[in-house]
Amino acid sequence: MSFGTRRCILDFIPDIIMLGKFCVVGFVRLRRQCVQQSVASFKWILKHKKFPLLLLAAGMTSREVFMEGAQRPRFMAEPITHRQKLRNAKDMKARMELLIMEIQYEFCQALEAEEKDGKFKVDRWERQEGGGGITCVIQDGEVFEKAGVNISVVHGNLPPGAVAQMNTRGKKLSGTSLPFYALGISSVIHPRNPYVPTIHFNYRYFEVETDTGTQWWFGGGTDLTPYYLNESDAIHFHKSLKDACDKSDKTFYPKFKEWCDKYFHVTHRGECRGIGGIFFDDVDYPDKEGAFEFVKTCAKSVIPSYIPLVQKHKNDGYGYKERQWQLLRRGRYVEFNLVYDRGTKFGLYTPGARYESILMSLPLTAKWEYMHVPEPGTPEFKLTEILKNPKDWLRWSGAPRFSRCVLYTDVKNSCIICESSQSELSTFPVLSMILKIAQGA
Image (cartoon, rainbow, N blue to C red; front, side, top):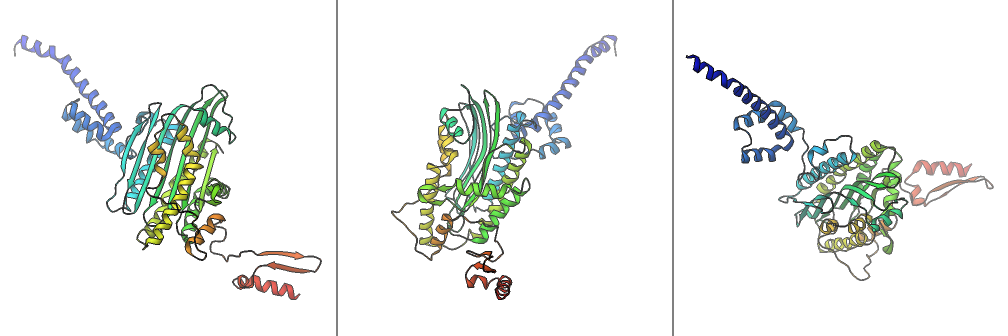
């Protein structure tokens, strides 16, 4: 080899080194991008030929990439906030968005598993004023006549109507400009079979900047609206919610159960919308982390509280009478949502609101009849009596139920008195025996 040839090769060594560095850097960047963007990034790289296919193959087959990709959460659509920002584990807004995206995916998958051929229509939308949402809906399914699972991530400045509504419940929001950030998940499931109850759940997080600083709070709840009362279903549902609440605080369930009965009361009808569940708002205790864990546990309890009821009753037989009663009860559901529901009002007050998603909670079909009253003694009448008199489903589950049993002592006459019927006492022989002994003494 001549001196000139060797010199020519040596001249190319820096270029070869630079090419090697470029390949290494390209490989690292490619692998990182593939992990972050998954399939969408893979298709984009192939389309634009950003890197050589050899490097692409090397990056995609590395064990680390597969391990990292397998740990990425699955969503119904691309998040509203960029995935890179959602990696900030210290930002509660990011953590809440990840949670509601995961809950939406898990619940939609559980519902689709009960449908024969039905799949959710996924509609990802953006709001001009800031943020957006993902609406997932099934209509005219075999099991679910209409099922909607929405998430929304919106921000901007609070409109006067929303400020006035919040101040009426004790908030002190002051300032000329009130930047807010609200995100949450909301779902309403209207089944086709009248023996499958309707469920509603909503979990949300809210931040607002005021003159005095940042205010934040969580809200939400889960409630059940049956068309025909099944006590074992009611006990299962409420026990699932109580178990979830007890993981944070044993006082939460009774407090939020009572709040739910009051909140979902249709005042002009003098009855509740359903058999309740839990409802809470303005929760900023014990601290932000504790409140988030409570909301997360409650949201995770939706599937085990509801899906077993769907599986139990979706194939139950029913006729024209049961269907008409279902449509009448749906009418009452609509009345509450349009007249009283706080979330519906906030959505309608918000500029740039997406009304199709807000009104997703309304059933596909409903009915109103003039002065309709169910006949006494019928299953329909039994349900209305419960709706007028909310019940503590867990207090006496598995124990004898007394319509009215009060024990007290009459000091003047030296005796024990029990106000209850003899038929009820006969179901509790120990108490009956104690009373006879006491009266005989």
